[in-house]
Amino acid sequence: MMGRAVIEGRPVGADAHAALEARYGHFTAMQVRDRRVRGLDLHVQRLESANLELFGVALDRAAVLGSIRAVLGDDGRDASVRVYVVESGGRPVVMAAAKPPFHLSGRPQSVKPVVYQRYLPHIKQAAGFPQAHLIRQVAREGFDEALLTTEDGLISEGAITNLGGFAGGRLIWPDAPMLRGITMGLLRRMDVPQERRPLKVSALPDLDQVFLCNSRGVVPVGRVGDVELRQDVGLMASVIGFYDGIAGDPLD
Image (cartoon, rainbow, N blue to C red; front, side):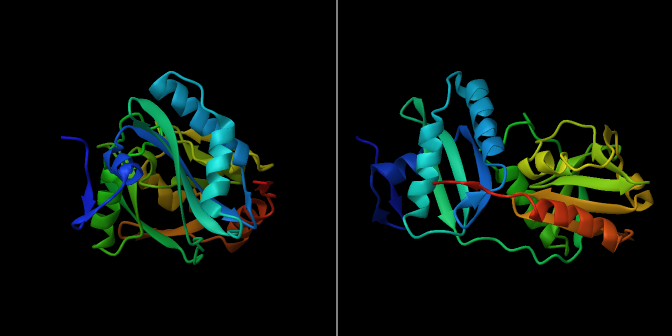
């Protein structure tokens, strides 16, 4: 019998069947505004590096950019876009998906520490069930994000974010295995003293400001578990202002 697939009883074509079967691969997520993407080269570099590690072959940059343009169409200017490279038919293929753009509310987020560490955390893996499950679990308890930690509370990252914080004018990042996100990479260009160091959940209340960042932007953290955190409006304004001031790279 040849490969077949249905969605709610409706037969789908070969391309949809391939997407349903895709399990092994990696991706990057971006916000497109006016057909521009902040850190576009960083997104492509992420895909190139992961492709070499997972598949042992170079990635066609033109295929990546062409897929983004194709999924936007001629008239799409603002969107949330994901570019996947997954195994299909024994080789890596590039897929892209677009949906409406995401706009952050800007309100302080609440995070719940969860003991969990991702396998190959430096790879943005196509199969994201564990993180999706954790976010759903903490959302039922009224939290916005899961904060991934070790048994003794050492922070690595959020389920879909990186965490950073300020202490005495220094920007602190956790020193732990993690996915170094694109927005984190862009914020590391800020002209402020920065360092990576082991950071435990118990230390967060001592920081002047804690924030989360990912392709959707930068947002303050107001609460970790049941503990309220300090809020420094000036610090957050400087971080968000720096990020918002980064010019997007054109797709066309």
